[in-house]
Length: 333
Ligand code: ADE
Ligand code: ZN
Image (cartoon, rainbow, N blue to C red; front, side):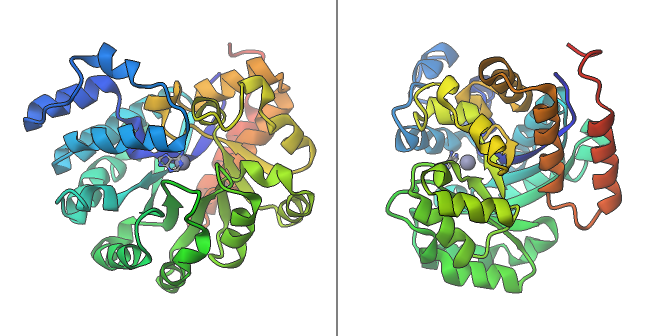
């Protein structure tokens, strides 16, 4: 199903496929503690968010040069385009790279070599979102924002990711205020493993415009009512939730109930190289397993463009929405 859609929750480092990891390891003289891609794939059995993050950070050792980040982003954009993605708002984790000695400029410039040419090369418009690692200090986040200042023409917004529980949004009040003052858009992961209170805090203290995941809002009816009333977009990631055991099985995913409640849901792929699928794989899975109707799928696609940070190009957003409206489910498999 190549329903036109925007990808709003995608960690570029989470698109590192095993084959590319080994290719980059060989190119950079990095030794991975896995014999081959099969053995590496064996490690993709996660208990929870932290067990995934351990592997996610470990494999980043192969990313060393601008060209590596360019290759990583181009590989993702090609796959995304083939899965109906017209627009991608892409997260990156600078601290995961500066912490091992890279310059933030290597990361941003490398990614930009791919993103800056993405409309021409892949037919995918892009935005870049700098994420702070919430299990690092607030001071480190402030230093990261400072280091990013020369690159702000390439960065649309800030986000918050990594280990959630024990690292509430309020820890990052100051850096989010500084980001807002710089004109950056604000999002944050909240309510993936953490409690519904973290969602409320992300809205009230950090001023986020979208909530990444937000899944656990379903535990708090008053919060659901607020999210519905204020049309706060949630960037859900169904296959990620299954792999990280946030839900028992895909059949248990609350997406249909969330849509019925009037929440502004979107469907995204999070870390597709690790969780078994890119954008369409997630759409196909929720269609097949949760029985979403064509009109519900169209609503998800419309939401993805409505929730995207395309305020600087409303003409493009209108064109994408028209494409969604014109999409014929009957004529495409
Ligand atoms: N970093 C990469 N993927 C993540 C996720 N699903 N949750 C939090 N941090 C992440
Ligand atoms: Zn995520």
